[in-house]
Length: 59
Image (cartoon, one colour):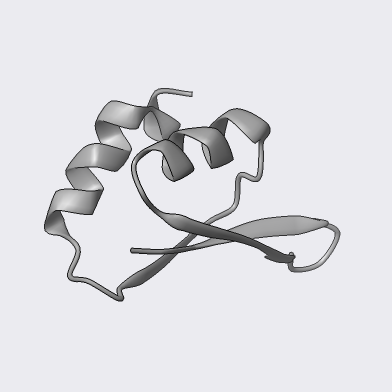
């Protein structure tokens, strides 16, 4: 859970350029909420194999 905290996402955001993309295997509600609160656009996409969803994140 620490990897998906607002503090960690804030540090990642500061290193990203506008329009940059990233993705995460986690699609939990608190992860989406933390990302959206920091101003990211969050899209749920089909996951690989047996994983139902992953998140695609854009700044």
